[in-house]
Image 1 (cartoon, rainbow, N blue to C red):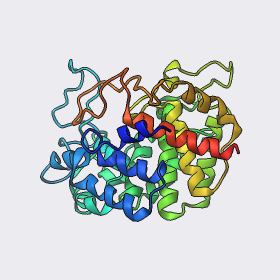
Image 2: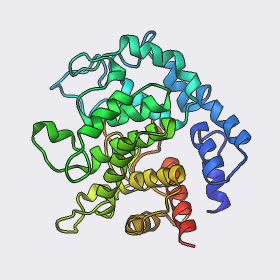
Image 3: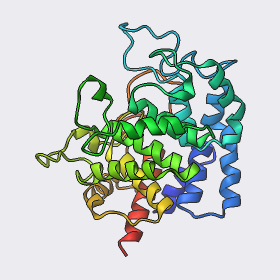
Image 4: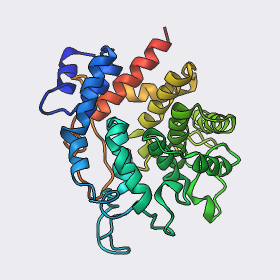
Length: 322
């Protein structure tokens, strides 16, 4: 990790508090009192403050749970809009917004926001495990009791160990995209509450689903399950990629003390090979659709988020190999 890359990540104007505090914690190993001070700025400066500023007067964002109130189903809008409550909460969690900064809004979301599916109260969850996985991650992070949704997810695990949003339509095979969303939720729940024996067992089974596939391969043929899983994506939204998988396993390892599984080696080396000559990593793609923020400079350009995540994953991986 070069000094130039660190300076780029920590730039006082072009970077953002949401990146800088994680660089301080995960890469520079700064004292907690220092990175917590920078983390507090997420609520008052930069991307976090901008998202808070566009919140609805009462409730969540854009008048909806998963879709904005003005979204026209079957219309001509390109991509999925990412302005509604569920997507904003995921970004704020990723940014590291201190939960205390959202305490009142979390309560107002409970009172006013309903899912588009059937009008369910927001924090009680929807029907799709990919959506509920993110709900659990966000709820656990922001101090909501999401235990009932966790129990539902545990019961929806498929025989191969993972999850699939298409299960309600007959699918019996898990998907990488849904499984990673649920795993992130179960891990956040475990970090916040300690979890339950059933939630911890479900998390381990879902992780095994990814590990036995080396984080991106088909179990049947050994070929990549989807070439897009090898690209570097941000924000991930509901999409999987190998860096998202590795970052989950890093977080799980830090929580549980479990060493990295050697079956992740191919994915880790793929991320290493994507490093540019100047020590940074590029953004390959981002999900199409309207959003509140332009976080990166665009596909093909160096990405602070991808670089931060790649560096901390490889630091964790390399330390475990020695």
